[in-house]
Amino acid sequence: MPGYGLPKGTKGLLPWKWAEHQLKKSHNYWVVTVRPDGRPHLMIVWGLWMDGRFYFSSGRQSRKAKNLSANDRCAIGTDQADHAVVLEGIAEEVGDVELRRRFLRLYEKKYDWDMSSFEEPILTLKEPIYAVRPTVVFALDEKKSLNAATRWRF
Image (cartoon, rainbow, N blue to C red; front, side, top):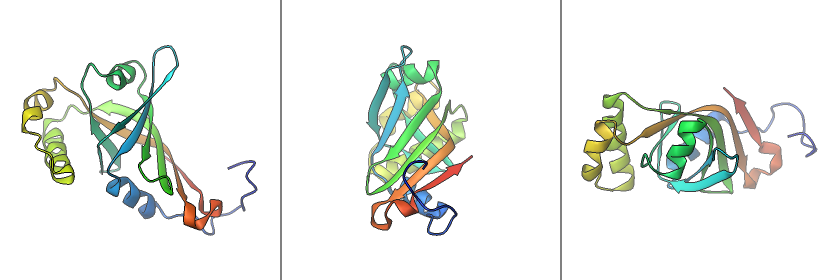
């Protein structure tokens, strides 16, 4: 983090498993997409961290889905700013029906939410499920101070 006067080297940096734990346990996630005219769009979503990707669903006519169809770059943030993980990446629509089934099952369990009314449009690919592949991830643990600020590149 140039300009912050942080020490050089890796001593005190957060381990990747810490970031993955935050990505898994977060209840709400911030999703940032970009409108065709360049204006940002920020929205809260529910989602899952699995298999090294962040997965979330959306209505095909939603602003974020329209934005992602024009520009697949996005950012995801966890819900706890004092244990923040910010992921920048590329969103890809999931076409694998078995992966979509798995998503529905895990999503329903995590959120204790009946997804049966969403199954048909999701499993027939009418509505999107996105997998965000990280390109860079930032993590900050407020209790450890800025000296623990960590960045991973993929």
